[in-house]
Length: 602
Image (cartoon, rainbow, N blue to C red; front, side, top):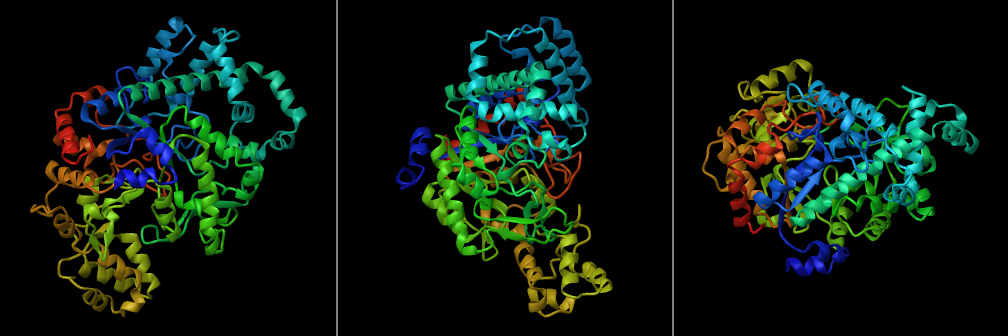
């Protein structure tokens, strides 16, 4: 039935290419990886060691967070190009058609100077690497390299704009393109020609770096393919306002608006990301060339790709850029247009490349999303801790066949930290906001928190329900409000009260809610692998938690990849607690293989 469904879906040709098979995989952020060869940050060639580990454990998918060129905040979902790869991931030792003999000492100096400290990557390595690459490029002859010339010709659609954007940005540092001189801001041909004539070498340098990145990442795909491992890339749904894409194609974006997400039970104030939404009518009028070109380039590196914020293809939440509030609306506004709007984009994406699309369909999901995904045979995400029905965890057999079963995501806590610090709790700020909305006085909120929650078990801004608050009626009595007045707070209580015991029941595991060792992690992961989902792709850190020592390093409330809605140096900077060489020698590797065999994912 599984094979028949996928081979009769709208992506049948993609499934035939990779094979309809229950698979497991690992998701990793490249910046967090490191080997003995890395220069202060994970590099594309390090992924070959990760592929070796996958071969050892039986995993057959490597999912990457975005590796596009990023701006000063180094957030992978806020890229300055949805085509170009980031030079910080380049392995200088493996440059092609370049002699780096005279630069080996400088490379060693960078390794020492920028080696990660305190478990965080130093992004200062990017500027230093590019400076060294510039020195190497200046003594490298590139005129007669046929592959380089071919690369420039094949990718002129985006490469010319990208390299021009980078050079002008250097000439006007610390200001965005919207503040450039008008002739540059508006791409006046004579002004751009003057830049080109005066900066030919620098423009070629940026082309050369992208060619080197292209070559290294393509070699990773080939290496993984030889081991039967597929690469799943992550293509950001949106692109930074300060990007080559927006500067070059202003009419493809609605610049007066900022994208985001509406308020929900997890983000009471909603989210305002700042990236401009697409003007899909303009993109459609140009034959979706912008979308198609992105996917054609990406298929050099990936067998599959994750459509970030998939639900945004149907409608996206927007608010005015000039308005500091997050109040907004969807575009299109009319719900009856959403499915048609999303379908025309998805059709173009599916037809543009041989890659299998996978969807990130979390958050506030419109009803049309589910049946469109099913029709197209595109896997969505079934998130274990939130995958419930009637306030109970849904059994593994209930997971969508066209889904990826996950324990956590880059925007959530790791599983062990959800279990220890979040399960059975409600966010403190969210609780206060809900009470204020219901008209409860500040004094009564303070009193109610003392009665409703277990102080000893409440940590890291999470409030753990007292066992005695064992019904919605008791909650309402203490708060002094009718259930109708509390609305979403009653719902949040029903979702979270007794959550740990409900989860143990779901696992069929007789352990204690106080348990926090390797065994409970193992049971949660086994459950994800045994779901009906075609894929089970877990963050690298989840696999590492099968090791007692590494579990101790990860099980901290502050240990996470990103905290949505926040800007912090702790976001997008955390290193894996073990090197890639160490990963290959973990005694738990065989245990992972056995898990996959038991769940028919080998």
